Image (cartoon, rainbow, N blue to C red; front, side):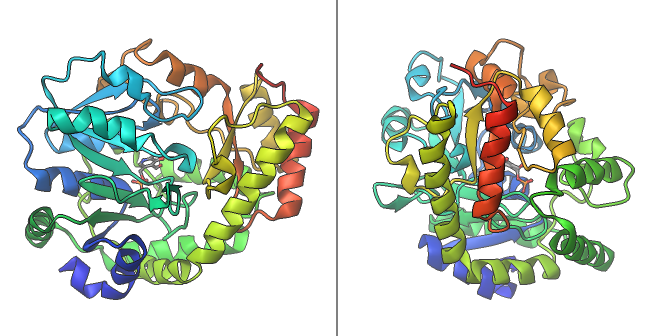
Length: 386
Ligand SMILES: Cc1ncc(COP(=O)(O)O)c(C=O)c1O
């Protein structure tokens, strides 16, 4: 139903990925939830994911009646470390969520070689990756299904929003049935609020204002004044009553506008990725040690610094856009990690990355001047991690 109504945006997404069905939801996490429900996995089965993600990923798993489990990341790629998969007990694992963090592609060959003989389904979290490729093949085309986010700071924004891509006809049919039976349509008031938020975002958010406005937006969300990424209820792990909701018309319109300029978006991100990659060593910072990374359209370019807390605060004051996520293994800070089955020390590399990594903007509003300003800020105030 949702797919047919939104055929033009969904159709453009399908055309980009060569997928069969694109379903449009209120958020990316809802796409994950729908895909998991449609898979019909046994209740309580384990779904693995990197211990370096947003808490809404394990919460979607829990809402679907499944159990999240965590695998540590490779410190070079910030993605699941495939070597660690071999040492874990996979007897109760039904699925593995691979997340192409910051747009850096996962080592899919190694992951598939582990998952296939064990009959473990692969799900791709493409919330950071739209256009990243592995040997010419798009991330998002390797798993049983892929989900994407249209949240504000994602590859393109639908003003919150999310997509689910399915190729397998049986799974697509199961999603379709779930959607027909349970999916709520957004309230007209929700559409109006989102329209206003999209307009405010377009008008006000610039690299120089992004950090301050993010703090204000989070505070307004806590007060219930704006539609935020996650409600306080959700941050506590409780499923909101309007969770399983379709994308609103204003979000679909914005999605259409953004997908029309996706080539420009990808070109721009790739150029800035290459720029940071070439310039960071000149100012004493270690660039990513991932072959061919300068040809990928990263969502953000991650850099390790020894004084993260200090420079993130300073960046707000100086009007420089420096991202701080992920601030803990299950972002954001303040999330009770144990509510989602994460115990301190489970993923030491993720915990270290959360302490050290800041990320640099590559989006269309960040031009060459912004990128230079960001690097100059790092050069002056940040201490490299050696
Ligand atoms: C890696 C990752 N996965 C999933 C999500 C969830 O996306 P959404 O906010 O659209 O539900 C996010 C969003 O912040 C994310 O960073």
